Image (cartoon, rainbow, N blue to C red; front, side, top):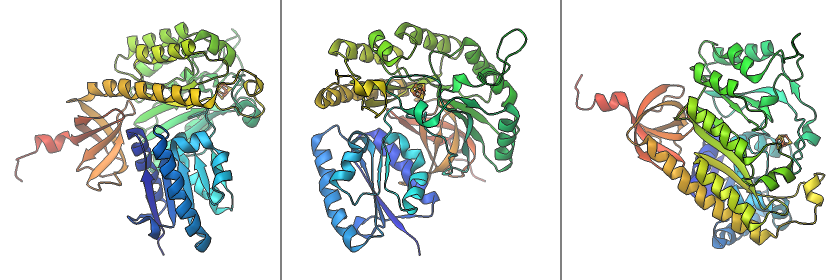
Length: 450
Ligand code: SF4
């Protein structure tokens, strides 16, 4: 018997794109979308905090479904998005019938979270900080794109972050084991891989040194080692740390055709005082230099990042530095979060915490700017032909395939739904965080007969 899901999406385009991805995950798991939420076995509210009434609406919807759950204990209730991110466990206390509370960055991991629910757990996945840094499981929701862990753990001491305590010391996998995994993924038909590490630039530091004292293996060396596995068309890597990011790595990205022109390099704050308090180990100026270097070698590269607002002690002037940096760099995408104290981290104990309403106000202002900047960045795609790797079908329009540019922009492709195909696509519509286009062949073939 098939199971049915219903997704209710509040807020911005980013939320809508996330909902589409989560619907894709559910489709892959064999669920079927249903229009009436009262017929659904799983209801997912993808929430937004930009407007208070959106938040209030979520609570009223949830209240109704929580009651339904008393009659139908098999009903699964999920709250995703920004309210989930902010409220975390508080949501569970308010609505104990909930099964999953998940921040926006967990959209790709919905399958894993639901597997935990099936084992009887109530899941809170809102680790606000390590947006891409905490993804350590293979991405099972795709037959095209796979995650490959290359280094586990983290030796840094960012004062807000719990990862080093929970994930332990850095441990790099051997390059040969990584290559074998990639060969096996290629044999299974995967076209794209994303190398993963919480601080991926640390790769190889624990694999020994050469007689001249240099590391035997670095992330750059690894890219050269694995780039030519037949069948793998695209290689990505996350998450980069500005402290360790090298020019040699950028040169490798420019030299190796499979490595995509997209860099995810969290800056966290645009203010040097806050960066020092976070113990990030770099300055804003160093960050800007890295981006200039990337643009020197790869002028069209997309840049994304993570940022935190309302870190303890952050003044309005310091927050403005973050806004400045976002405008200066021109990010294609930015994952933003209001600081939330994680138990056991140094910053959680400081007495200069920022009131919630100030954090929320800053988060909204930053998100507003991010959407503006992303919309500007998207303009460059208008009328261009981009190579899209089709990863699935648009759940809202089955005549459209959906995939990504090499620069990681979500793209809907009219009339091309064959998953796994790399298609040249003429971009006809641009939005802040997604594009729409049609295959070039169908453009040039328009009007031809036979
Ligand atoms: S680099 Fe910092 S933020 Fe990233 S996982 Fe390590 S301690 Fe956490």
